[in-house]
Amino acid sequence: MRAVPAVAAVAALLVPLAGCARTDAPPVITDGPSPLATEVVLVKSGGIAGLTDTVRVGPDGHWTRTDRAGGSREGQLAAEKLTRLRQLAADPRLAAEAAVTVPATMCADAFSYRLTVGPNQVSYVDCPPKAKPPAVTAQVVDLLNGATG
View (cartoon, rainbow, N blue to C red):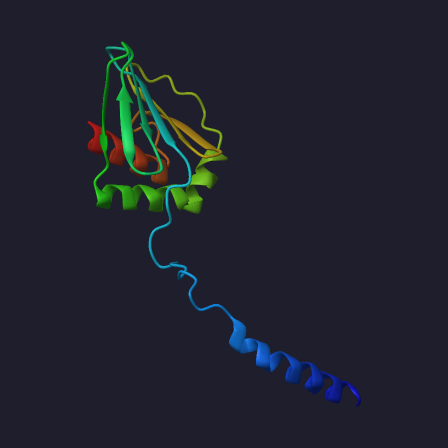
């Protein structure tokens, strides 16, 4: 029963220190979209022409699209596209899609996609109706192809 007076004594010593806490520290904002933590890289290859396009998007939404001949374009993702990319990059289903082994396809002239987001790399061949692309990965592919065209 002596523990109660000891706890009360410690509490009595700490109460005056509570007023010493700093209040000028900047607030931590947790309700907005988190920043894109890493570069996102999409490689699209194949098709009849045998193209290879690489799109790189930095954490700030700046993108560069390079074709197989070395020509490149660059730009900035619109705010709503960057917000959506951040949501998709943080989606836990993306890591699950990266863990799945996709069997090889025998689809002629199809496009192959390889998406890298941090440690996650997902590849698929766009070969409907034989194969259905991974849902989150396909959304990122559509977003990046549409935004960087």
